[in-house]
Image 1 (cartoon, helix red, strand yellow):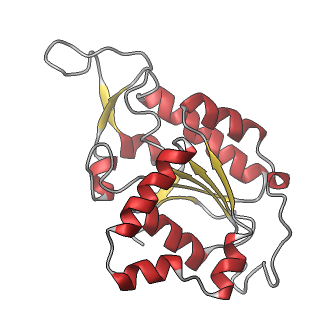
Image 2: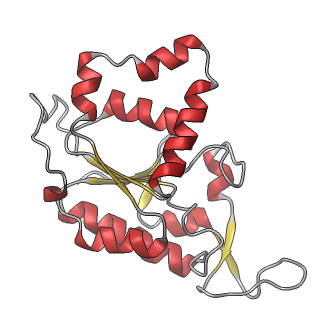
Length: 207
């Protein structure tokens, strides 16, 4: 089984492009937001692009159209939704038939990918080493149980306006869920970098 991976942050349209280019049936994408905000962000981004970029997304080839019909997309807007989905996830959740030659020449595993894995924990009581580790373990276990490859990727330039993977991985969080901040804004008690938490299961990937 391939190692779980952390992908570089991408915008919604970049995510769609990468899915279409690298998809392997029955890859499953979990979006950690409600459906309408995600599609609103995707639409706004596409409309602000130049014509060549828009055509790349909107004018799909026949292959891209076929691929999109076999991507299983789900929305998990809270940590509770995410963990509940992962705890019951099976390949049968993707009810569409496999496209021709779906196994691929390289034999790579399909992805179980969470877009906004860290983002969904932020500004909640689960924004901690304990909370993030619990969700990471659930993701990796769900992927392994179904012969998928676990993957996480953050929205580039999202709520915290981070652009690079190192910025996300360099954030510090408290050890335990429910830890409060001091008046100064610092966390009470010991903190740890996110890279140390996710490094137990995931390896980074530059592209």
